[in-house]
Image 1 (cartoon, rainbow, N blue to C red):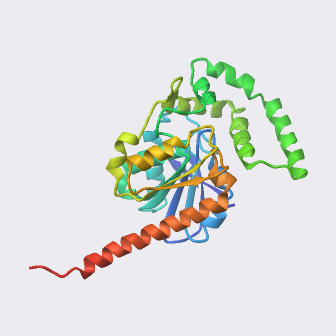
Image 2 (image 1 turned 90 degrees about the horizontal axis):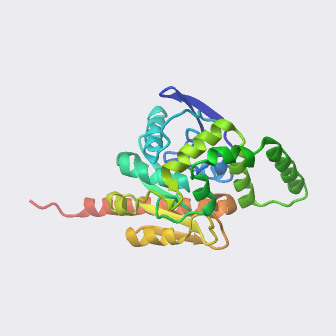
Image 3 (image 1 turned 135 degrees about the horizontal axis):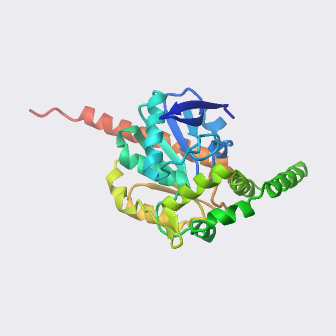
Length: 297
C-alpha cells in the first residue's frame, strides 16, 4: 500500500495516503477508532484508475490527537482544507461507519467539492448502534478503558494473531475489530476516541441523523453498500436512506458484517468502479441531450 505522507493543517499534523494519478479523485474516510490502514485492500486496486486520498482523521492513526473539536462538522472542514492543500477541487467522497457520517456532513457543508457519495455501513442515519459503543459513551468510561485495553493484553493478543495467521487462520472482520481495540491502549488515542464517540453517540444510541437533510444533496449521485450481517449498525439504516433518497443505489452484500471493504474488497472496488462509470455516463447523456436540443428563439 502507498506510504504515509504528512502535512500541517492549522498547527496539527495530518497523516494521509496518496496513491494513483487518475483524473478522478476519491477521498476515503475511515471509521471510529480506525485509520487509513482500513483501506489497505482496496487502495491498490482503486489507485489503478483513480487518485486515492485516504487520511487519518485527527485523533486517529498517525495524525495529531489534540484536545480539540471532534464533531462531524469539524472533520468535514479538515477534509475540505486537506483537499485544498493537495490541489483537488472535487472528489468522490467514500466513508465507512463514522466516516459515512463525516462524508454526508462534507456533502452538506461543501457541496461544490463533492462529485459523488458512497456510504459503507454508514453512521449518522438513525439511532441504532451496538451496545458496546453506547456503554463506552457513558460517563466514567475514561476510567474503565485503560483497564480494558491494557498494553500487555494487546501485546499478547498480537502474538496470538501472528500464530493464527502463520497457521492460515485469519478473519478480516476480526482483524479490523482487533485493530480498533488495540489502538485504545494509547492514552492520547483513548481521549480522542471518547471525544469523537460522545459527539455522535450516547446511551440511547446515535445522537445525530442526516436523514432529514438528505434531500438537500439530492443532486449528488449516491450509493450505499451494506453487509446483511452488520451487528454494529443495522442494514435497516441503508433501506431508510433508499426510501428517503429515491434514485440512490443500495448494494447489500450477503454474509458480510460491518467492514465490507475489508471482508469483500474486490466486490466493493467493482461496485465503486461501476458506480463512477455509470454516473459519468448519465451526466454525459444529460449533456448530450442538452446539446442536441433545438435552439429556441
